[in-house]
Amino acid sequence: MIFASGFEVTSDLDRRWGIATIQGRDGVSIYDHWADGYKTLHGMMSRGFPNQFFVGFYQGGFNATTTETFSRQGEHIAYIIKTALDRGATSIEPDEAAQNAWVEHVRDTAIDISEFQQECTPSYFNNEGEAQVDSKGEKKFRWYLGESYGPGWDAFQKLMHDWRDKGELEGLVVTND
Image: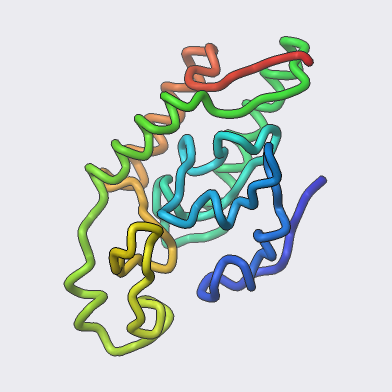
């Protein structure tokens, strides 16, 4: 199934995608799963949501050309699906350790724009000037596109190219239930 809800990059994810209705294992919605920030592997898959793929700007390489971003992500996702199917897989999702390592790496390399967000005129760039409160009660000013890969677009593309060249589906749990 392809869940395409149109092109609107600046509204709340639940309103934009209806992601509260996307449920993974144990009935947890992706919206709740990401309540304290995105948790993905390469910005395209999330643990607990087997066979679910995402395209967007969070935790991946950022390119101002949306169609190029989505095209490259589509190629990467197609590679994962084809390789998994060639191996007889019926289910694929990130390994928890790999996902956690990726999230940590992205957050360690992400560009800190919190000062800008706090000083910026209220707009969609800074959630209309309202901080988001995480499950620990801490205020966070998050960019509406989430955390992107700090070293940049080209570095991210090279990383994905090298990952595919290994041919191992490293960091993914591939099963044939």
